[in-house]
Amino acid sequence: MLGRQPPFEFRDFNMQTDVVIVVGNVFHEFAHKTGAVTAGEVEALDRSTAHTGKRDIRLLFGQGVTTREASVSLDRFHDVAEASNFGQIVSRAGGHLSHKHKDHNTLIGAPEEIAERVYSAPLLIDERSELMGDHQTGLHIQGMLQVESFRQMMLAVFEKFFPLPSGIKAYAVINRMDVSFANFMFPLPADIECTVTELDINDRRTRLAVTMRTLQNRQECSSATLIFTFYPASVIAAKESDMALKAIELTRNDAAVSDLSAVGGILRSLPPREPALVAE
Picture (cartoon, rainbow, N blue to C red):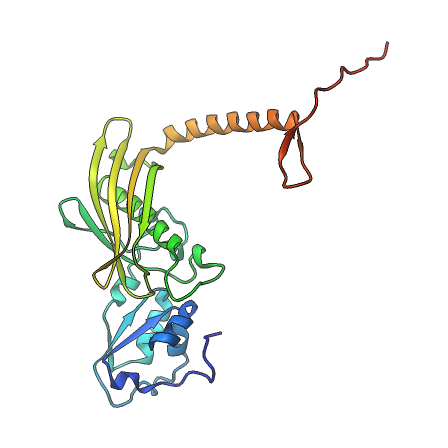
């Protein structure tokens, strides 16, 4: 399961460096290629095994590690290790910022303002995330995880710094999202930087335009331009309901005069119907 045979034994890598990098189990191939260790491998250690005579080890948690796994890693390296970014791992942004119900689907920490209208948050991927439920390709972080992290960052910046007045629940509409990728991002610590380039607020809604980028080892991995509009949920819910009813009516009308092709499931028009014979 962890990608190594024979079973992992504590190596002497910490005799060469004071930093032990721990990544999620799903990134076992990355760990095998680079000398990082997976959370499962650390958990398999006996607490006394990590005492190799070298003290002042620093644990650095990469992507995929859960809060529980980070705590277990600290336990295995008790008395000899400090965790550089443990505080980030246990301080994932709340669902009110990311608009996620399950904590492990939130990909970011809470954003902080680092300059005027410039915000930063750590990327915090939990390997149980909904976007990692199928497979992991290669050694790098998949692009769609970065796209989703941009979306969540936009929501979190709005909710924390530009919320609707009086605590009104907001409904977010994506108007535009352009994403570019420059370099592979690996399952190591990374940050998302968000700059608000346009802020348009009136009595009906709030619109934000932003530019974002992900940074790892001071190198840009991906970037995005986003425009979001935030409406009171009660207003947009009524409009969405009306549009949904119209959409289903059009779909039913199309289905009534079409046939589902056996090849490819394509809707095709039926010939005009003959007038129905009515019994005298």
